[in-house]
Length: 225
Image 1 (cartoon, rainbow, N blue to C red):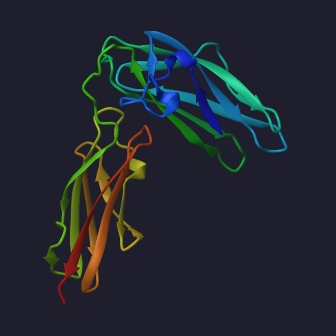
Image 2: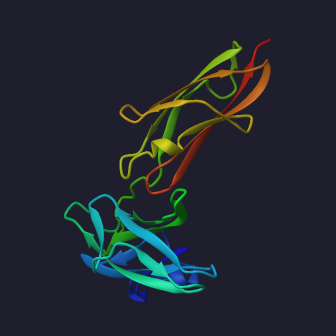
């Protein structure tokens, strides 16, 4: 398990009391040191590869060089990072900060659940928020429409300007079941051809960005007999 840890001075005002107003990101200086705690709940040591990612002009790097981290049984290893705000970072605006880890194994690396937080360049004023999740729009067939079957064409546009859309986590579901689809990262266009029986069907388009934020859109259509 991964857990991000900042100094209490970096917390949003009143966040500890639950009374803070958005944006809730940690308030950081131009360069801020923070820690990622890597926990091992197993009875044997675990070796992990840990990486950090920041977006929108932020960068994150370890404060000392290392390749892999070994975490003792039922223990914790802490790794220090420096988070740096570039010139393009807007003050008072939340950005995502992501840490990911994998456990190397002979039969293939295993992923650890990521740790995601919000950070912002310290400011006395709130900035204009930026979208932190993908946009899913222009979904067709439209909600509530009746369409001819059995082949039903579905299209949508999925975009994300900050971290980018994770193309491997874009999907279409029909009545709770995944359906084949194609997503073009260059255009943001998603297409799918569904073979549906007459009657009502619920169609969902789901997507994640590279900072692990989800988005979705849905439509209920009726296929004519």
